[in-house]
Length: 212
Length: 153
View 1 (cartoon, rainbow over the protein chains, first blue to last red):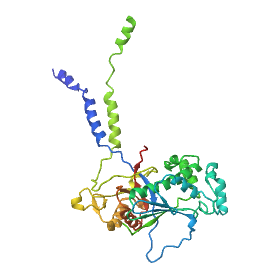
View 2: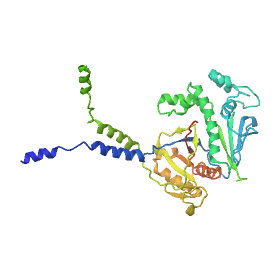
View 3: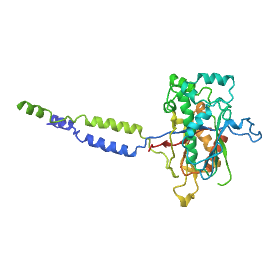
């Protein structure tokens, strides 16, 4: 008798297991928000010493690509009023890759560029001297009343221009270059080779106080 | 004719005994990927869209700052406010907050801290630049403007 009872108790009905699992599954499906830690990266400049005035950097006007955004989100790009951002990324690319007044290192850099980028590299003396450090700077100046969204849109396009240049140097698209994580030595090497001698020179000026 | 009939009869019932296992596999996937929200967000968050997104590999290095119009406008007003952890703070407290966040990291990682700025798209540049100034003061210069991928239309 006892043994029979014991054997009966051993049989657990597992038929509803799937239903229970489904319930749990649906709960997690609903509550899940897959964490998105994505964004546009930016490195802020080091803090200023109040006793020391900011170092005067001699930069020619032609070496700065000025983007001004006012409180109404109107754009003034290189002194020109603009309604939309179409083609801005290509303009920035041309500006960065211009060799207006190259020195010896810049000529070596020019010779190392792939043909597709050489095609973009003009030698207009009115535009930037060379893409290397101190050569081409993108300056974004906002007003305190500028919307964050517009600012981010412009920064996005500037970043796009740089990533496309970097990507093309190592034979990738801008998108592929951007998603490199730098965790394996091979990826790190690609990343370093892409940005070698072309630093990402984005200057974000202190916003105007007026009109906020 | 009879041949056909026999064949169809043989495959009528599908074995479903492996179904719970499959469901459990899915369940475990979602359990592992789920991040339960640890903090209540007190400000509005409509994250702006962008295309050139990058990812930070090491999530422990990230600290989050939320900026937006308070949800409870009768209590906190309608001007954009800054939220760190669970409370609304003033911009002047930011240096202290950054140092606290840095203390949570190990010695070697302290200067690698990333600040993820989750700003509402309606915020103006004024508060954002004040925050950037304070972050420079606190020497937490790695900043990420959190944004979501743009939907092409």
